[in-house]
Image (cartoon, rainbow, N blue to C red):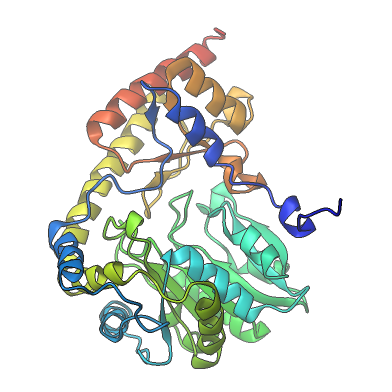
Length: 390
């Protein structure tokens, strides 16, 4: 019988995160610090708008690119946060989460064999999506001593004649790293010089704790060579609504829209109406959640310092990325033993790239009470390791 499978798909590894989720689901009393999902419910006024849309019978397809009023609200949001103008009719598309936007941006831009630069550690979808688009992924290994930021020299060293695009994943999952304006200006200079493009995943843009988030599209000459990706999952606690968006130059957007038309048709109608309400009246909700995450972030950093666990201070998203190199175990071994011995689930750093070895991703999208219990268990575990007890 002929092999029914695609060689390309078979060679792609499944997500390294799912393994630990599956184990946790079978352990009733386990505490998980592994999920990258807000622990808040979607604010009621946003849910109400979704419910109202159903009650009004708004259950049909929207236009492929999304509701006009939602695309208009997206352009207003970017204008007021980044002082950048987009044409709602030709430069914005509403997608099924930010993940779809990443996929269709790569497929719209990349020719077979062109290189896509991917800084790691980073979100697990970038490399597989690049491969599926026919790209050659080129990994840039970010360094702890640089707070896992992408430096201009690292970017310059990675670019070749075949480089087409850079994925810019900041604020970063899993490290919590951010890029400040000075960092981005140095990066942008090289991007313009080398005539390459950027896919900027800014899904955690509202979850920054060191000043306002700066998008690379706000820098001179960058809007026309950038696909800006964002969404509603993290900022508005709307993960299950599956709604994201992309903004890009018209010539790129036209091709992204074609892929979206054939593969998806349109994003969920109910979710789109809820998102209009989120953008119009959700700023206070975002501020409340951001402050809560920041309290948890500071709590974790203090706890790590008290237990002597090395961790650079992250200023974005809702993750910390502590080093466990002192214990002489791989990240997967450490996470596996922590789960079995203390019933606390974290994600090995290697789930986000080989250079994540020696680190763990710990999410603080959990209550202080749960974090306190989990940290006590982590401290007990590492104390045993330091005392040489098996």
